[in-house]
Length: 357
Ligand code: NAI
Ligand code: MG
Image (cartoon, rainbow, N blue to C red; front, side):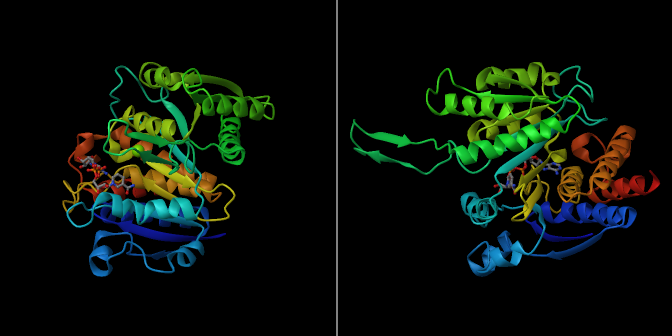
């Protein structure tokens, strides 16, 4: 098979870790006998903004829409372009126009990484957060009245459509069904939010009818966050609305150590449009240019992209190589993991391990 990939390094350490992601993708293509047809784009960056005054060129949609996936680094350089412009002018456009309604984040403790949760070991923490990425609490419906008076009032509505809720639940149930534990947890708050959240619960119950082999439970978001920290071993697939998912998808990876290793997918499961894979971290201006950024988040994102493209064995082999290198640890690790290695040294070590395995 041939997979067409648009590569967008973006800003700061994005431009340093993306080449390490490509290095492992190329090794995977030759080992597992598929073709990668990729092209790099230098928009969605502060440099491009400085030259043009916009983050994306006219015609970006048609240009990127020809690809199967987008492999993204990080965007943002606050000294040059305000963060709300860099984000709304690029990533959020991709999410909306390519209908990437699933935000997927693995929460998995890798060997050699110390979890901030005391006493936890790899195997204790291994689940996914599935966040609804297009509606819910993040609507722009609402308004402000009596501004500047003591009757000043602001309202912002939550929007849940049956299509929007059911499609994220379907994705999460399918994912749960594909995993050994077959366990789905729903994040809710139907004891306090009395219209939208009971509706969410009701759609979870309806969807569960189609998945008799998946065990389902639900927690209110407040106790759920506590349980992420206290009992991460309770979870397998956790599905949540946009706001709750936003919170859980930062809390989850924070429980598994450095932000430098966490990956994410913004997915259009029907493959009508390209999906986008990127590390959770940003452009890290504080360490950019030093060559010491951790490339594991980008490499893990490459593995998620391979999984999405149907290259399941290659995706697993990439993660085995990552885990083997991290388990040995020592100097091959970047400074954020306690070692002295550069981005390139660690990326190269993962590639060599991949070829040895
Ligand atoms: P950040 O994730 O860039 O950095 C936070 C801290 O984590 C920094 O101390 C940084 O050095 C460290 N860090 C991040 N990635 C690392 C890696 N791979 N290896 C070692 N250390 C790493 O978040 P921050 O500083 O809040 O944002 C910087 C810029 O990035 C802003 O313009 C922000 O808008 C943008 N950003 C972009 C994202 C994206 O492209 N999806 C996500 C988050 C932030
Ligand atoms: Mg967030």
